[in-house]
Image 1: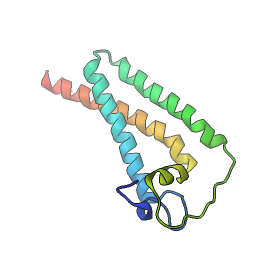
Image 2: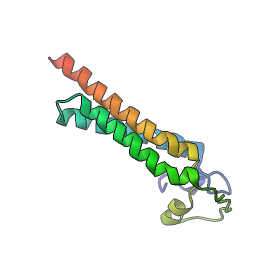
Image 3: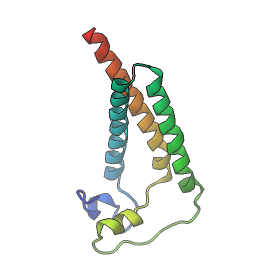
Length: 125
């Protein structure tokens, strides 16, 4: 958030995250899953291990999203002035749908990274 600044991280006058922040978050969510898929494919000879990691990312991610889905407290607090990094992190209002698709993006990234490594391995053989 610090590199964006509060003006590009949040929508004007609120703590709702901007579409730019959502796009960057989705990119990094998929990308980190892809790195995990590459690493687990390098470390394991079994093709089931990346699937297991993707399943665990999906399962634990959905479990972490449950409190956000079940929360019914609206937090419509107006934003005023500049913020510290800690204030920005504590007040940020991420849409619920982002918390639900983030585990799926990570799991897809794991599978994409594992597929990439298997394709590279076949070309070298």
